[in-house]
Length: 150
Image 1 (spheres, rainbow, N blue to C red):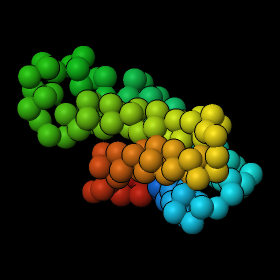
Image 2: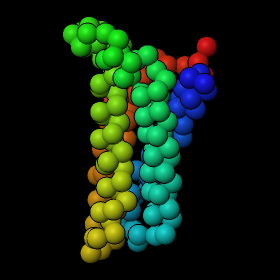
Image 3: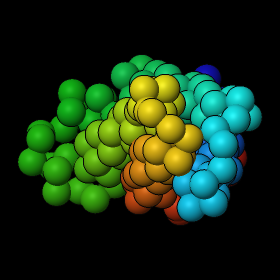
Image 4: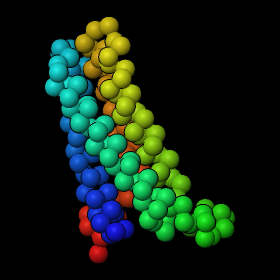
């Protein structure tokens, strides 16, 4: 079961990254091009946050129930060992914390534009929030992990 969950988590990360780049490019294009806020902008933002929500849910299941690097690391090893081991620290602490922050920014990218007065401000708020979400995502993504587990 762990291998299936991990494979889904690995594949879905690329869906999140691709949708994130699309939504970021649309927001920057709208902001700097002073374009109108369209239904498509809202829908792409919703698709991005929905994919991210599914990714976070899979990550939570892996962290708490499946992975030896998540909660099990803290239950089976001294904290000093978890924190001094680069792999354990990444998957038990850094990766989950940064990704949760990223999903918060992704959601803010959908919420804040609803309250903005004009379209350029909507695009600006979306671009900043989605940009932060993508930067955090790319920073905390384990780049050396294969697409599908071996």
